[in-house]
Length: 436
Image 1 (cartoon, rainbow, N blue to C red):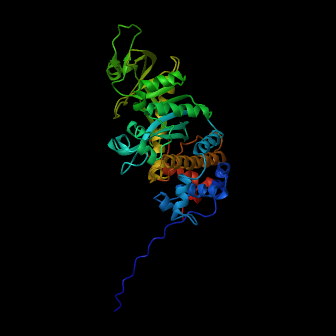
Image 2 (image 1 turned 135 degrees about the vertical axis):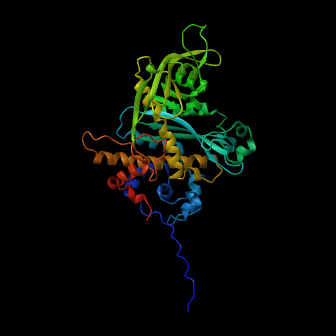
Image 3 (image 1 turned 45 degrees about the vertical axis):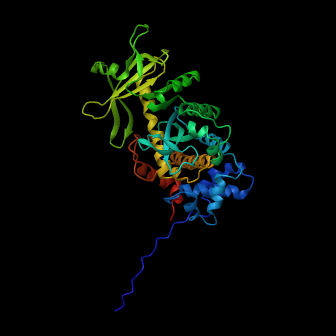
């Protein structure tokens, strides 16, 4: 009796298509001006193709294994020593996205995200708090800006946070290497610099929004006011306000102010349609003054949100400097666009390999991030074009997510990410990006 064991067949690693896909070739064609040689532009095309593929691990080593005639060294060279200006390429990408059809009601969203790391030599890595894991851990942190309308969004820019210990350590800076012009900036200062960058790029927007880490920072709020940037920012329960003009009025916490308001003063508002109906809660807005640490007062809106009847959830608070004539429904809708940047963080990491860069260099980290934003923008670009081809008169547009997996619970805009992607596939040809 023959007892020879049959060896299990090893699953062949899928290969990235060697020939450029027509849609991707069209999208990347303007990028060739940033490279002095054709092979360099081809390396960029291959790298973006790898990020868009279904290859689960997306560092230079694993991507090279599924790319015909491409080596790990070539991909590393693209991210480090190859001559090209990633900031100029990013501004060109933004200009291309601004030519897409627009509803004209976009906002800029700011948030930071963390990348857990081992060791201490990757640029900016240190033990610090990140909301990504909800604790202090060894990680890098980036500050990020997202443009978002009601039904689509795309990333604007990202900047690595360099802790003060790093900024003052010449030896660590030299090993990374961190450019000499990069100095220590708080996350609020980085976010304001990104606001300025968005303005220089010609991104028109109705307001700025972000989470309570930014909303509770008076330097950030004052910086927005100096730039005449309207904002609707989340704040924490201990945010300080004064309810009257008189200087004898007491400074109070926002949670204490709102809990005393009569129930009849709260209004039920729906801000977005989800898979199980409209997202709805009770809201109230009070015209009052926020108070800086030095006692300076700034007029605006305190916005409270509490669960409706039969609903569960925490109370939430926002601060806005919109004029007194602004409808509450508008402020609520702007405030709830924050999910777009959190959705981008999740999808860019899980689908496009943003968190899988293994190099230590400052330039490599930023170049990888720029190419992740380029890849994400390509998916948005394809989806918007396909919408125009298939949308009939009066047909509403669903929110878009490029992720083929299950929806993030933070996304409150229509069908799940998988359903939205599947709907786009039939018309856009994007399914050809998936590996066989």
